[in-house]
Amino acid sequence: MATWTLPRLTRPRLGAWLILAVAIFAGVTAILFEVSLGYFQSLELQRSQGRVTLYRSTLISALDRYQHLPYVLARDPYVIDAARGGDREVLNRRLKDFAEQAALDAIYLMDRTGLTVSASNYDEPQTFLGQNYGFRPYFQSAMRGDRGQFFGIGATTLRPGFFIAEPVRDSDGRIRGVIALKLDLTGLETAWNRGGENVFVSNPDGVVVLSSDPAWRYKALEAIPDTRRSAIRNGRQFGNEPLTALHWRPDGPDFAVLNDTRFLHVTAGIPAPQWTLHFLVDEREVLVQAWFSVIAATIVAALILAIGLYVRARRIRAALHASQAARRKLRLANMDLAREIEDRKAAEQRLETARSELARTSKLAALGQLAASVTHELGQPIAAMKNYLAAAEMAPRPEGQGRIIERLTGIVARMEKLTAQLRFFAQPSADRFSETDLIAVWRGAQELIAADARIAGIDIVEQMPPGPIPVHGDRLRLEQVFVNLVRNAILAMADSATKTLTVTIADEGRDTRVVIADTGCGLGDASLEDLQEPFVTTRASGDGMGLGLAISAEIVKEHGGTLAARNREGGGAEFAVCFPLMAEERAA
Image 1 (cartoon, rainbow, N blue to C red):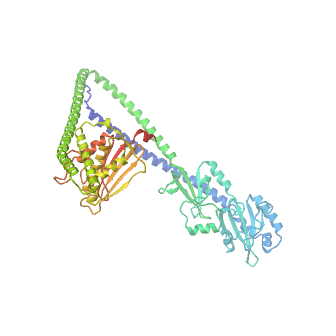
Image 2: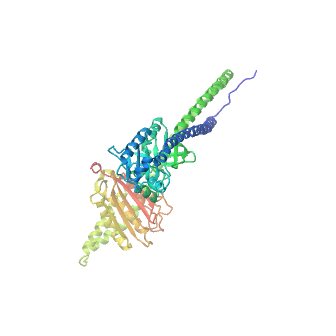
Image 3: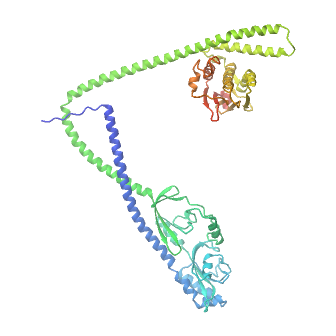
């Protein structure tokens, strides 16, 4: 009798199979969705073709319904007699009766100048009588002997309409005037709007003249040249409408985007006025149908899969009875593996702790080495300078040098304080911090580096706020940061053609930012992390010990700030230090 055994899958292999299954499912779903989408798009385009044909025939029927009437009226004896100057009162009543029977907006007769001499609305407040329409294109076409057709906003009633005009000729063929009628198409737009479909009509200039959505009316599908705008304005076709652009763009042969929504787009031409009928279907409707098809197919596939899994589960259940012993061994092995994992985690934790302790110890050793080296290097020169200054104070000296010796004595005393602080460099003393003005700190540092800058020919540009910038810190240590960064900048600009040092102090809300920028040789390929290491320097041997940035970085960190550096685009380097403002200043 054959037996079934389960394959032993490791976690990585199981994950790979899971990823493969998800990828296959996603691929099949995508293919099914694309096929469904193409199918439903094709169906929707066919349906849209039928709908646009219906709308086209309806519009053409509405336009052609009264095409014959101006031709007939132009040959009516009453109209010809009125055009000659005959009885126009009779014609007014006759035209009014025609307009009411045909449900037209208006019928009116104009003389050769475009002045309306007879109209169906002669007895209404907004009558056409006495109005001159010689500027209208339909009148101009009729005066040339052609039929005039024109859509525009009424110059008198301010209501849109479609105008049809015919020349009124005498028996000798001479044009005596123009008979025109105005057809109101707002009822057609109302029916389109109630139908709930997106339909609009554009004229040859790309202006929407009829629309199921009133917001689209009199908007331009594309930019209208200035010459055409001038002609439209002269013909007063759209009154005072600005003809702004509609948020519209074609997106392929069968699609368009309107107001950031993608539509299936089908068009049809209207021959007589050379209009274009546009029919739009929201693509989201097609997407919903496609997704429903995918979901339905997924449900069917899931049912088939569930049946298959049920059959397979019955087979596997029979095989499981034969593998109980192997399962028990596997459970024991898993328990041993879990214990081994826990032991390994504990060992890794101990190793990480040891690494942290080693890094901390190495840092303290480097800091101690830094403090010892700086103290050793500066101790003897400072002591010698003190002795020389003491001898200079006791010896007779020319008038005016006393001030210089006093300033040098103060500088030496400051250097002694700095070297004394280095002895405790590895143990920051935040208890000595107090409110300190960064502007005053810079002024103190400026006194120390002024002579070096002057000798090196450095132009110092300051960008400072008008008021003080209070921070919580040690003034001497902050001065040391300024001095170290500025001296590094001065040395970096030793061989530069342009020697400009820019010092910027800015209040940025919760922090204050100090930027020291130079026009020197830059950082090169070195990173700030490399330069902060003790005894690492990019200068020639004997020009420095590589301690300045290490000390500055530690002082900035001690004050809760950050130090950053980068190469400037135009050459040189830029060091930026951020310090937190005091709580009272932040509250203010």
